[in-house]
Amino acid sequence: MSELTDQIIEALKDKAIPEKAAFFPRFFKSGPGEYGEGDQFLGVKVPDQRKVAKEFFKEISLHELEDLLRNPFHEVRLTAVIALVYRYQKTKTEEGRKELVDFYLSNLNYVNNWDLVDTSCHPILGAYYLEKDKSLFYDLAKRDHLWSQRVAMVSSYYWIKRGEFKDALALAEMLKNHSHDLMHKAVGWMLREIGNQDFDVEFEFLKMHYQIMPRTALRYAIEKFPEDLRQGFLKGNI
Image (cartoon, rainbow, N blue to C red):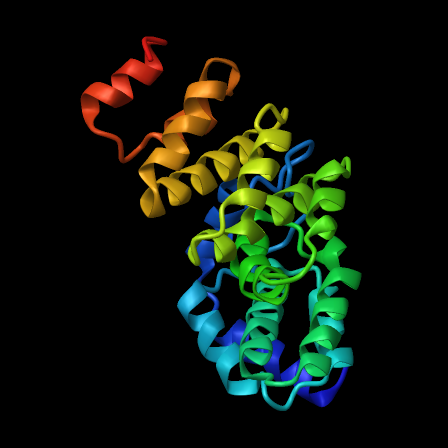
């Protein structure tokens, strides 16, 4: 650890709220056998983590960021990925962006809860691969690893926002019957985002797949549908 990483951790500890530290283990499912098993919490709110990341992201080295990503405290890791997003968004060269993407992928094991994934994957991987071959995401989707699979699905958010649905739909089809609730939510969320851009595209996908989709994925996907249409999907009448 360096003087700078110590400074960042101390800045987070200064913003810790004991009530949050007590609540977060339940919220992020860190108990035995849960998806966040063993995670530790300081009790820092996300806006405060963003302030800390914004203060330090320009000067921190990748080696120091890696130290933060490997920290046992959830908020330290989240602050690290927020800083990495800020760094990526300020990096103008292809070489510099590629370095940050490679760094992110090499440390993917430490991006190990849904908020870390959702905060970082689409503005980094989604952005970098917008106009590139997307085989990486299919490889991630095939891994027997929840967070890699969620990275694959949620990265497509960046493409969806720019009217690119093909890979998002293919990934949703691959992952739609995943065994974990967090993937049901991710698939449904991305389908809903497609519908926000082009209702007909989402509707046609759901017509083909809704009867075998997990209920949570379907509910997320149709959340903004007119009530009569929503009930039609839920009752199997489409």
